[in-house]
Length: 75
Image 1 (spheres, rainbow, N blue to C red):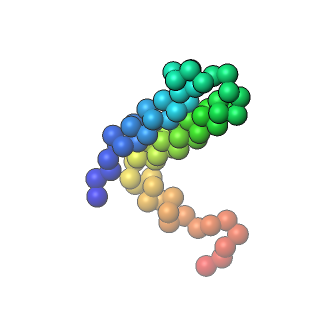
Image 2: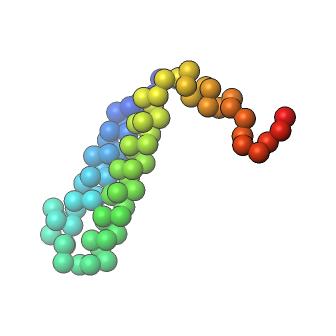
Image 3: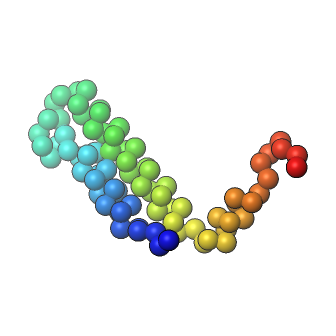
């Protein structure tokens, strides 16, 4: 299945908008709402960046990581 990278970039843009929305929409003086938007935006951006990074990894490297034994387990 082909990965749809554009979805992760859209999520990044949405996260950026959520992060900046207190200043764009003019509610930057409401403390709790600002923090909620900033934290939510940072979480969205971080999750999208992690997904983009995962997609960009070479597939042979991901396959090796799945097959590597877990620390502390003996088979």
